[in-house]
Amino acid sequence: MLETYENIRRLRKLNKWTQEELATRMGYDDRSTIAKIETGHVDLQQSKILEFAKVFGVKPGELMGDDGITPTEMEQDD
Image 1 (cartoon, rainbow, N blue to C red):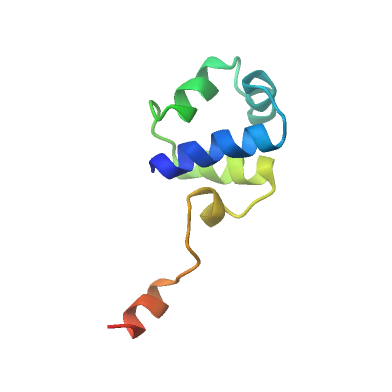
Image 2: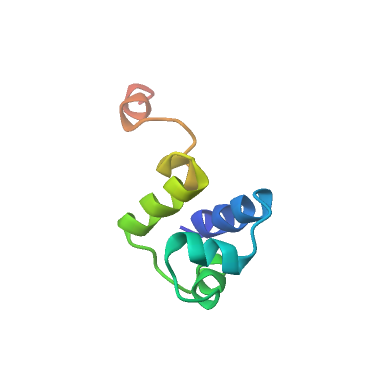
């Protein structure tokens, strides 16, 4: 899950958004929640991960660090 938090920060910086700007886009009252998320001090619900992905314009799997290997492909390697 730590990779998700790091990706949120990376994507925010890539978009040249402040924590305040991202907080506004996500519907949070202030930047403190974003700061806590980026440092891994908040457990994100799946619905929030989906919302972050939507705001950044990426797939949820990309946000969570999905390497593109599906469970079916992993089973075939056994």
